Length: 272
Ligand SMILES: [Zn+2]
Image 1 (tube, rainbow, N blue to C red):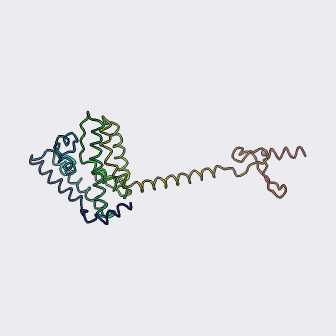
Image 2 (cartoon, rainbow, N blue to C red):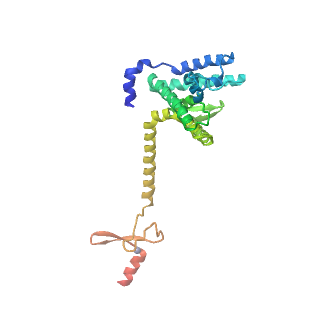
Image 3 (cartoon, helix red, strand yellow):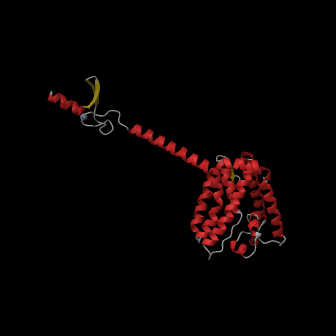
């Protein structure tokens, strides 16, 4: 991504270090507002119809909303744990990418989410679409899993699972969710944010696909060459593969080695 390097030279100073921590703190403030009854979860999500009706703050507030509103103490602990993992993954991405790239990644995903919500709403005007900030966590997780496929998470603190398998499971559920959606607009709004991920990883994904193709081609060639017959009779075309019961021998004819099977050899010796 040479364009990104150029952009970083010009706009790098705008990047927010530890941007996900900033995001989490903003979500905590919003969450406090919800707990005290000043704010409502539904009032903050991105709902294109509501934005058209003048609730423009939703264009920003949907990113600052916590992923869900915990109803019990256990759910609250889970939310704290969730934020911790999110922050840990973002630290990893920032270390690998640098601050600017992580900022651009998040911003791109958000812009695609907004564009997808409005395009989806225009395509399916009867539906009422909304976008929760969940896509942001999934995007971050997919980026983290792509860069660290073999790191293991302890599921339920017990079962070690490689991050890449978790990512495939999430992608699988995503596909099922898309199929179950009631309108094309819903599907566009759901899928759009992940174009940010595709944009960032298209080079890497293409390369891994090419590597896979090369590997399978190589494997196919090896099988083919193992399939190839070692001895082929010059006269009848039988080979040690097609006729494993025959006996193949070579005789010298005009300085060339000619392969003959036992049947053809017998015919020769009879006619002689
Ligand atoms: Zn033969």
